[in-house]
Image 1: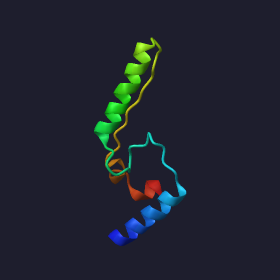
Image 2: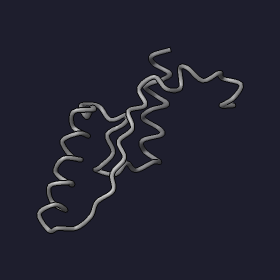
Image 3: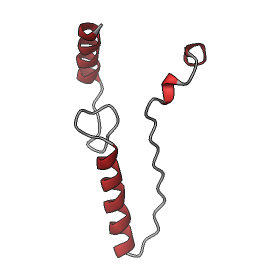
Image 4: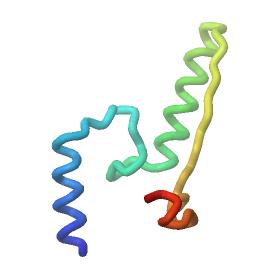
Length: 72
Protein backbone atom coordinates (compact mmCIF):
# COMPACT_ATOMS: atom_id res chain seq x y z
CA UNK A 1 0.00 0.00 0.00
CA UNK A 2 2.86 2.42 0.73
CA UNK A 3 4.08 2.28 -2.89
CA UNK A 4 0.59 3.06 -4.16
CA UNK A 5 0.23 5.94 -1.68
CA UNK A 6 3.57 7.47 -2.67
CA UNK A 7 2.76 7.16 -6.37
CA UNK A 8 -0.66 8.71 -5.91
CA UNK A 9 0.77 11.49 -3.74
CA UNK A 10 3.44 12.31 -6.33
CA UNK A 11 0.91 12.43 -9.16
CA UNK A 12 -1.51 14.62 -7.23
CA UNK A 13 1.28 17.05 -6.26
CA UNK A 14 2.19 17.39 -9.95
CA UNK A 15 -1.34 18.62 -10.65
CA UNK A 16 -2.24 20.51 -7.47
CA UNK A 17 -0.04 23.43 -6.50
CA UNK A 18 0.09 24.09 -2.77
CA UNK A 19 0.36 27.59 -1.41
CA UNK A 20 3.47 28.46 0.57
CA UNK A 21 1.04 29.08 3.46
CA UNK A 22 -0.23 25.51 3.32
CA UNK A 23 0.78 23.46 6.36
CA UNK A 24 -1.55 20.51 6.18
CA UNK A 25 -0.22 17.42 4.42
CA UNK A 26 3.18 19.05 3.83
CA UNK A 27 6.24 17.18 5.03
CA UNK A 28 8.17 19.10 7.68
CA UNK A 29 5.39 21.62 8.28
CA UNK A 30 3.29 20.97 11.35
CA UNK A 31 1.06 22.57 13.91
CA UNK A 32 3.91 24.57 15.48
CA UNK A 33 4.69 26.14 12.10
CA UNK A 34 1.04 27.12 11.63
CA UNK A 35 0.89 28.64 15.12
CA UNK A 36 4.07 30.62 14.46
CA UNK A 37 2.69 31.93 11.15
CA UNK A 38 -0.56 32.94 12.86
CA UNK A 39 1.35 34.75 15.62
CA UNK A 40 3.38 36.71 13.06
CA UNK A 41 0.21 37.70 11.22
CA UNK A 42 -1.43 38.94 14.41
CA UNK A 43 1.70 40.90 15.40
CA UNK A 44 1.88 42.53 11.96
CA UNK A 45 -1.74 43.69 12.09
CA UNK A 46 -1.48 44.74 15.75
CA UNK A 47 1.53 46.92 14.95
CA UNK A 48 -0.45 48.71 12.22
CA UNK A 49 -3.50 48.95 14.51
CA UNK A 50 -5.58 47.00 12.02
CA UNK A 51 -8.18 44.44 13.04
CA UNK A 52 -7.51 40.81 12.24
CA UNK A 53 -9.83 37.82 12.36
CA UNK A 54 -8.18 34.46 12.65
CA UNK A 55 -9.36 30.88 12.88
CA UNK A 56 -7.02 27.99 13.59
CA UNK A 57 -8.26 24.47 12.98
CA UNK A 58 -6.23 21.39 13.82
CA UNK A 59 -8.03 18.60 12.01
CA UNK A 60 -5.62 15.81 12.87
CA UNK A 61 -7.40 12.50 12.44
CA UNK A 62 -10.70 14.31 11.92
CA UNK A 63 -11.63 12.12 9.00
CA UNK A 64 -10.86 8.95 10.95
CA UNK A 65 -13.91 9.70 13.07
CA UNK A 66 -16.32 10.27 10.18
CA UNK A 67 -18.00 7.18 8.71
CA UNK A 68 -16.78 6.51 5.16
CA UNK A 69 -20.39 6.38 3.93
CA UNK A 70 -20.82 10.03 4.91
CA UNK A 71 -17.73 11.13 2.95
CA UNK A 72 -18.32 9.03 -0.16
